[in-house]
Image (spheres, rainbow, N blue to C red):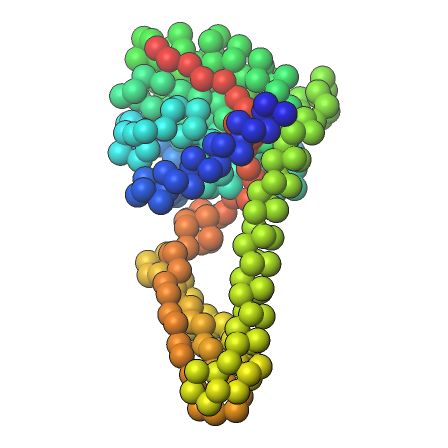
Length: 282
């Protein structure tokens, strides 16, 4: 139950952080996003091929992302919170299996994390911690970032992704993950239901123009679809069926994220993380 409460608190915290203006980077590829420029072109091409092969063989989406620092995006978050937020923002992994994996390297912060999808029970965190300590950090301490990323990614593929896909030593799934999904779903359903109740309440009101009760109606529609470059717009029209009374309320909707566009090297599958994985610093 403590795990469930921590997850719920994190998502509430994430919502507040986004509302306060914190942003997250968008991806350009579902395999490698080397924003810190740590990989030579041949190494990056090799890693892309390995991750693409993993996806073809097992269906598991694994992505490697490097950033100079976390600070420009979410300076008030912990490393673990930032990794989970970025994982969920991109939607790494299959939406039903939640088996995605993210390797995050923050060069100037001298920090990294292997973030696991919600489908990985907590016992897999130990596998991730051993890989961080054994394969990533020794190379990073010597500023051999490319070698560390390549060796560490190979270990994640061989010791976590492929065994997990094959069911070898697969721990039972944590029921707390499903409770978290249920709680978040309940929040969404409550919001939708509350809006329907408000619309029903409008129908019971008296028209302010003709004074007739029960003649008000509400319709909602999208007047402009959102794109990656521009926000969308929706409107709510309240009108009377007995007279010409009508009011229109308009509001903007958020621009589409990069994961909604096929022009950026494909899209992730919509997976989520429960905060599992392992971190390291050097």
